[in-house]
Amino acid sequence: MNTTAATATDCSKQFTMAPYNPPITFYSQVAAMSNKQDMFRFIGKDGSNLKKVTDILGLEYIWWNMEKNVVELWGPHNKLTRAKNIMQNYLTNFK
Image (tube, rainbow, N blue to C red; front, side):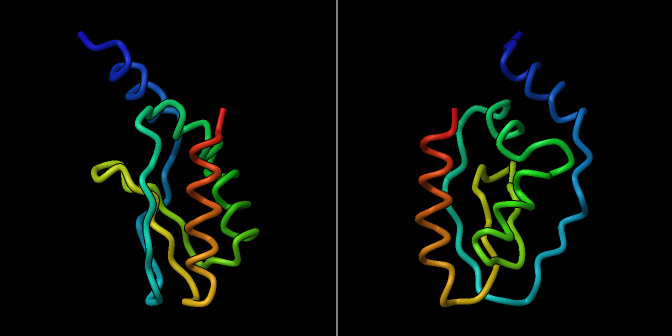
């Protein structure tokens, strides 16, 4: 049995994900971290960290698509390029 997968599954049980409900606006995406445990830590309990990042970046919606393992960014066109670069930097340097 793959213990990493089992642990990631256990981590996902600790979080209640809001329903997927992206706004009708511009979209971009960045590659997520390959380690699901790290992604859950990055998102934070009940999405608290992701909510803060959404506000800081001036976006309308951020979502981790676990199936594609990408972080979806939704918001004004004029903010997406900067937000994409910052998000990629956050994910690359997250410890």
